[in-house]
Amino acid sequence: MKYAVIYFTRSGTSRKIAEKIAKKLSVEPIEVTDNMDWDGALGYMRAAKHAMKNGAVAIQIHGQIGEADEYVVVSPMWCGKITPAIRKLLDEVPKEKVHLIVSSGGMNLKERDGYMSVLDIMKSKHNEDQLIEEFVGSLSA
Ligand SMILES: Cc1cc2nc3c(=O)[nH]c(=O)nc-3n(C[C@H](O)[C@H](O)[C@H](O)COP(=O)(O)O)c2cc1C
Image (cartoon, rainbow, N blue to C red; front, top):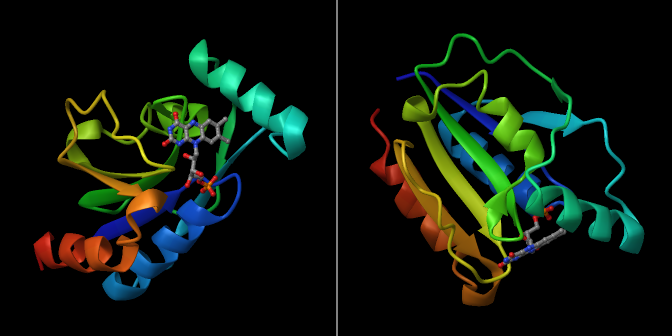
């Protein structure tokens, strides 16, 4: 099975998770960026507002995603949801081929329908490495 590991991050946690998974799968993680400024306190508020109203963003995918059989997509949680950039990515990557990993402070993602699988990695639980190990072990060779 050929996998692509794709992530969006604001503050680095999802990148770290994507890097760990990609290393175990022997692939390079692919970053998705958007056209917004989410930095600092103002950026945080902008992010929360944008997430709540399902605001649109333009994205750039920094790698080749076309040839994978399945996708591991890592998104931070913003206000209970995946980020606008990852929502936009799902226009190009079919959900039914996506293993979604949600990096959050402590909440579960509510909207889980349509994905191959959904895994919540919550900072409050301090079990990131164990969950990654189990997740990669669950993937088909
Ligand atoms: C705008 C915003 C909204 C957030 N909303 C939630 C939330 O609803 N529930 C939660 O558990 N964590 C929430 N968080 C925390 C992030 O999901 C968490 O810190 C995540 O690991 C950040 O990933 P990143 O470092 O890759 O950007 C929020 C963070 C931001 C910036």
